Length: 470
Image 1 (spheres, rainbow, N blue to C red):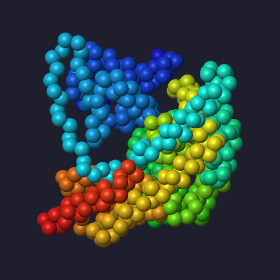
Image 2: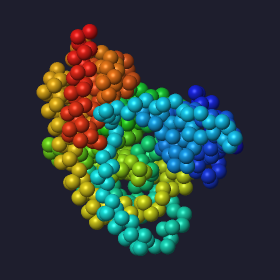
Image 3: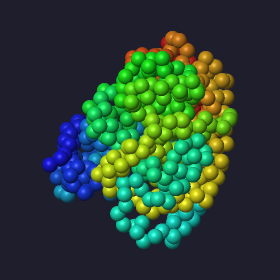
Image 4: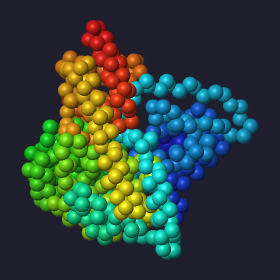
């Protein structure tokens, strides 16, 4: 039996996944945890492994673990607590239950990154799209489809991405997935099966998607430093690899935009190494001072795999993402998608296709850009007034901002001091691969009001003032 096993402390979680069966992986994982709770092996209050840790142990995408945990939370088996802790919420029948440990208090101001203001989700327009899509869908759309998704969404995404992001997509090169995490997991799986051995990522970069997935697949992960203009292509030239993962339109987390000469250098490197460029275009629609730079995929569609999703533009709960692939990868990635979950939900795909085709996606983004810009401007104004020695980085774009700390202040100490004042903020250090670098703070502002942004910076300034006085 083709399977994958993990023992993940502290919960003693033992999971066996069978990739040969038609049962989706997230359902297998949910069933294993459910059985553990019912049997008493997973007791009330037991903390389960973080989603990215368990995903890396199992060699699956983080989305598989997230979906399983969310299902079990909805059923009442698990509870999700502030700070990302997931615990067993009930005991087996007949077991004497005791109150679980009190959760840590929620922060007064949370500058956590990677979030979206879901309160502005366009419910009315989305419902119209659901109704139209349901009424117009041919009967065959509700049967088993190919791993690429529904044709209506291929067409809508091709038109949108070519118009707005400057891609060279065709309907035949689009594969629909449940988000960036699954999309990059499918790519890693296919590359590893083809014999890939090394993957380059930006340093610093996100640590919860491609890096653990590549490591679990047996690929060596190499970080190439970034500077104010993105990945340093002079160092990339000396690093042979099978693929590189980039955020060229808005580097995460520094906010740099890769200029034209470096984009050309990356593509020359890919050609010399017969390598794939994976373009993560995670928040490119949010550029506030000018039109966004076009996607790299349009320059070299046979060398670049473009990855996008609705998570930062509509809502992460929709679980909608897409890949625009070189033609030689389409069939293998689509087959890998079928093997994982038999395809994404049809009605959601049809609704999103209608939403895009009727211009609702464009209208929603036009509404959200000024709102997010005001929050970013409020953050910059507060930092300038209260913490002028912090140095904001990056272009006027996105849903987060990095600010570099002045010499003499330790990043970990600042993050801890902020937490004691009720402010949650992340440091840059945990996302580096190549060792220490300049201290910096990552401010996510998308889910905060302008008043909350100001209050958070005031609390942070008080915390840093106390540090300086020590």
